[in-house]
Length: 158
Ligand SMILES: CC(C)(COP(=O)(O)OP(=O)(O)OC[C@H]1O[C@@H](n2cnc3c(N)ncnc32)[C@H](O)[C@@H]1OP(=O)(O)O)[C@@H](O)C(=O)NCCC(=O)NCCS
Image 1 (tube, rainbow, N blue to C red):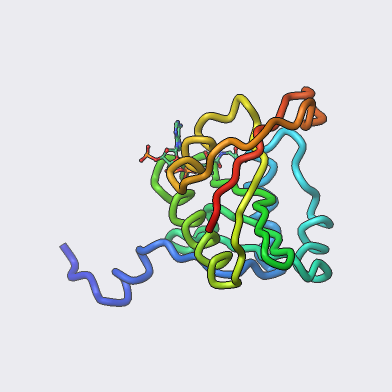
Image 2 (cartoon, protein in one colour):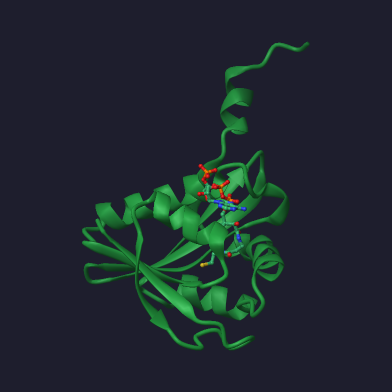
């Protein structure tokens, strides 16, 4: 077997970094594979170039953009807009690594609370959020427009 170099070992580690405009096609692929009512490319472009509250991150695994997460930081409150991992890359702790990074960014920015909405039926996501201490705080009735599903609001003090 070929000897693994230090650089090769490093590149095998998933990395989380800020989303760039050039990442949007890959992010859009993840988006359409993950959500019933996906955001458009235009929305991602505006989030990155115009929304001063928005912070977007991608997780790269061996050169592949495997997931992304968005957060709005408004004064001292953080709100997760979206998190998704490419279907083939799920269950490999990438979502967890990405969420941990975003939560840390919220803490570094001085946010005191983080919240998000999640479908009542989305148990994988709810389990992920519970691992980070988020708890249900309320229900938004008929929140999702595709099937009128309720959203659970989950939150944590940072
Ligand atoms: C939710 C999502 C981001 C999780 O990403 P992931 O990389 O697959 O998750 P990880 O491998 O990092 O798992 C971390 C934790 O999430 C939870 N989890 C992930 N997949 C799960 C599943 N299929 N069933 C139950 N819990 C699950 C578990 O708590 C897991 O920790 P554990 O393995 O110690 O039990 C991913 O499933 C996804 O992209 N879903 C579609 C988009 C979506 O629903 N986004 C959330 C919108 S609110």
